[in-house]
View (spheres, rainbow, N blue to C red):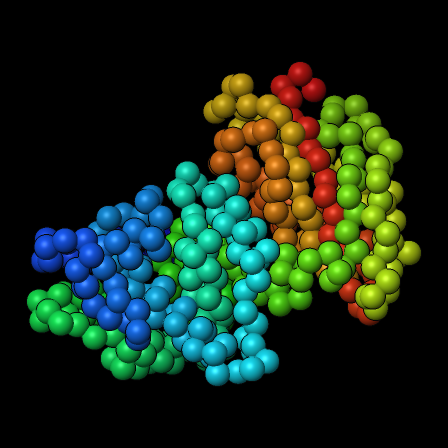
Length: 348
């Protein structure tokens, strides 16, 4: 909550301090500044920054994203082994889809890629010991990487940067990527949470595909029903023979269903709470779970759904990640993922 409050304060500062760069240049294609080898213009800002972002904050937000992403791109270019790893097309498509679920903005694959790499850079900042150390690193990058051809623009952006850094110094340093992403990228906390799932999962099935872990398709729980019915599972994928072990030997389909269905009363209560705000809200939400060996939920991505109320979908994801726990398996077995449908209806 403290991070959300300070983030609001930061955005207010940005709204006051950041200039309307378009008023200082004629034409949206005119360069505002150069970040590394990337020229920032109003057209470029529109490509990178979602429409829902406050207009006064777009310039600084886009500049920070380019500044961060370019560091990761440069590291990938220099390292033949791609360390850090290069984002796969599958990962970017999934990230773009998850971002679109959170708001009505149109996310392109290019915008998702820049955001992902910027998030990977923020992840490296989390290794610093203090906020002051992280800001010192950013200050050095800003000074050595960003150039301006217009003195007035340089003065205004520099003033805005100093205001942001002053606000950031008020934050307690946790060193957690999830906490730092909304701050250093000036994005809403819910987007930061989704982005954190992607940038911190180096061996995730999101990027590696089904060969990375066992995937159970069509595991049905009978939806969210008041009588707690449990339908039989359907179509189970074969265990991953290339992996270190078979998770289904230790965590059966029945065990998975039991772990989820014991949360049905709380999920019903969550649904009824949001039903008061959306009287006609009903439908099926398919969730792709990623489960760690210890049984915690690494991610709960909404794959398909017939419910469009985003506040409910975000609350559902938050609950599944924070509250649901599964049977632990040996560490050598690895992670697993499966799809699970939740049926919500006011008649249940």
